[in-house]
Image (cartoon, rainbow, N blue to C red; front, side, top):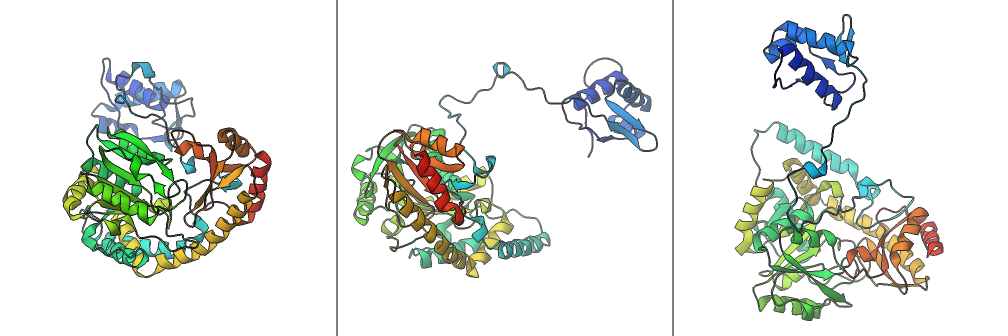
Length: 463
């Protein structure tokens, strides 16, 4: 690694070399054990006399910052180092007014609890890693022998075609590859849509309770976010603000309650959007895993000119695949592709090509079938155990990776905290609601199936 230091300042050159090296050691840029260049080589790189470097080395050795080993070179000594953080009050830059500073939780930041009922985490042990690794490796080798070029911001053509065919079979949606824009997960899809459709001050309607990252994203772009209640049939269309420019909904498996939106309510939402200049974002995040009834017709099939259908492979495969897509009406294709191009250019070509093969070879469909069988058993076990707890009202659901239950009386936050101390990780329903609805959300993708009964027994004792 080339060592670059600044010789700005006054004084002899040997003093400036000494100060620059000492600062690099003290702030950790030069770690203990790092070998410094020979004095002749370093002097040539800095454009100074060799004697200036040799004098600086000698002084640093005498002060204990460096050690000289005969025949081996000069090395950084193990001294107390560390960056010197600036005081926040001295920083002139600040986030703009209204920016939400609260960090969202990330599952990788925590040690995995023994009884892991956190939401949104699929079971990695069900995923065919060997097949996926082989496909990715093959695409990396293939593209290593190709000339370096920039990829299509709309996504690899083979992947767009594979997604279109997959949706035709799994969702009965008739689309072409031109309708598909590949993204880095759902969050980027929402970001692109909002950038193109929403101006600062526009009203964006979201479900209440609902998905916090979507609410945060729309707000970060200057939108006025309005929560709309959800009942047994889904989003209450009659409560939508008349001035809403965009409506974000999860009709196939409402997040976090789990109910599907009724067909009548779906038609009502489409009719509402057609009567005004409004768009609907349909987030279909995990309805591949279905345990009883067949899925209802997607909103996109009822009104493709008003609906942007967003899907992801983070739940069906792995979060680290970080690939999603949005079905785009023809009137928005050019604008959304341009937005993708100016935000991050394009996605990882090798991963997208491997995913296309994964879909076309039938591996995704086989994986979904296998995983659904396993998740169905977990879903049934959790619903049965929760139904025996008189303090809870379980929300009926037939798809996805979580089960929600309302708390009949009291505050759910202390229960969640106490459960965590007992080794049981479960989400507080209140974090998904501005009104802090008391209840719990039990994910079953990450939990060991053999520990479900024991974990829910512990939860019951805490409750």
